[in-house]
Image 1 (tube, helix red, strand yellow):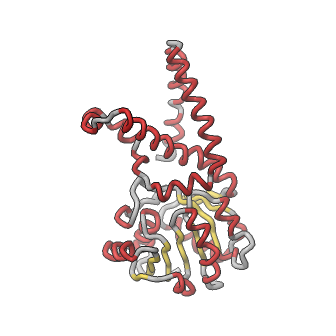
Image 2: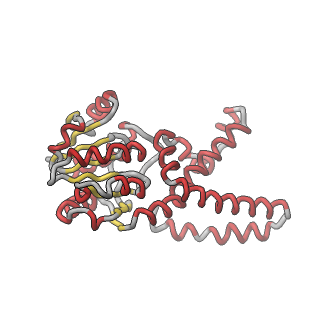
Length: 283
C-alpha cells in the first residue's frame, strides 16, 4: 500500500499519516480536503506529500476517510465508484451503522472496510495531528467478512504495525456501546461547561478557582461541534437511551443529597471506584 489518499487531514487523518509514514517511509501520502488552506497547512507540517482530488483516487492503494460522519455517508458511495478493483477504502468514523448501510449494496462493497480507531484529543485540524496517537489503542473493525480478504489483510497489518489492537464488532453493537463510553462523556463535558459558563459570569473566577479536576472533566467541551453534532444525530437513539440512564443516576444522587443520606452517597462512590480497575487496562 504505497499510494495512500487521506480524505480529511485533521487530527485522525493527519495522525494516521504521520505514523504510516514513520513505519512505511516509502509511502506517498496524498491529501484531499474541501479547503485548500487545510491542504497547505498539511503540506507545511509534512503530514502529506501531495495535494489531490477525488478524481485521483483511482490510483490509490488505500483511501482513508476521516471527515465528519454525515459527510462520510454522503461521499462514501462516490469514493467507492472511483476506487480501482485493487484499492481499499477505510473510514474512521465514530458511528458505524449508517455508514455501513449506505454502501451495503454497492458493487464495490468488497473494497470497503469500516473501522473506528478509538483514539483522539479535543483538538482538530492539521495542527492537532500527533505522532503515536494510535499506539496501544483499539481499532474497531465492522463487517470484516464483507471486505476482500487480501485487501483487509494488508490494511490490518498496516494498522497493527502502527500500534493498534484490532477488535471485531457488528455496526449496531458498536454504536450502542460507543454511545456509553464516548458520546455520553462528550455531552456531559459540554453541558458541565455550559452550566459553569452560565452561572459563573466572571471568567476570572472560573480561571482562578477551577482545578485540574474541572479542567480534565470539561476537556472534551473543546471538541469540534462540526464533528460531534453529526455523530449525535446518527446515533440519536442510542445516545438518548444513555442520557435517560445518566439523568436517572443524577436524579438519584440529588435525592440522596436532599435526604442527607450521605452513607448511601459514600457507597455509590465506593462502588463506582471499580471503574479505575477497568480503565487500568485502557489508559
